[in-house]
Image 1 (tube, rainbow, N blue to C red):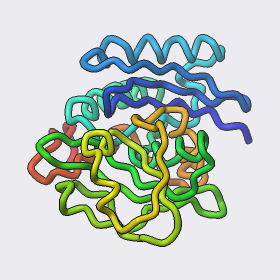
Image 2: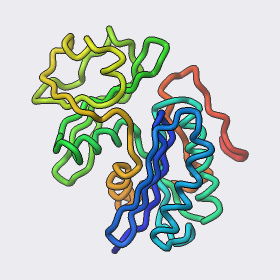
Image 3: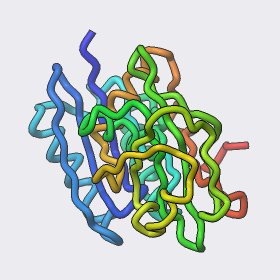
Length: 231
């Protein structure tokens, strides 16, 4: 069965859209801080038009659920929900940290990735991911928000590829960890790398109706204004 999944992400400075359709992947991506609202829908229109696909023909709509910029995550989920409501298709939330792990595999064949996003306020969003034999990404421990000086890896076995803006924000951090690391140029999540994760979720039945889609902020003090009818 050929899946048609549209992925949308605005959780970081990067704005990206990707569509898998008939074994091809069509992508759009642009680093555009503070312009996500203007950029994302034209990107969606472009990839759908290039594939000759309408929203209602999709099997699912994947979205970057965070962590990342509060505003960026909120924009992404709001736009994704609007599209999914209109097309009556289920939604799949994909971790931005897991998406960077998948990108590290695509670019560097990395199977163990320590992803860290600069969360501002002297903190990092961190997730440690390992690729399984089935091609899925398993979180080792939990995704969390942590001060750089308090970061302790959940697993130290093997080589861990570093991904995300957190390592540039704190350039001495990697050397302080009891960890064998490899560097990469992966800074931001890309929607195209959300697609493989979304496919695994689709086959596992890990989808929700649009009104039940929710973000991941990690910071407890950040609250999400739920949609009408949400408990």
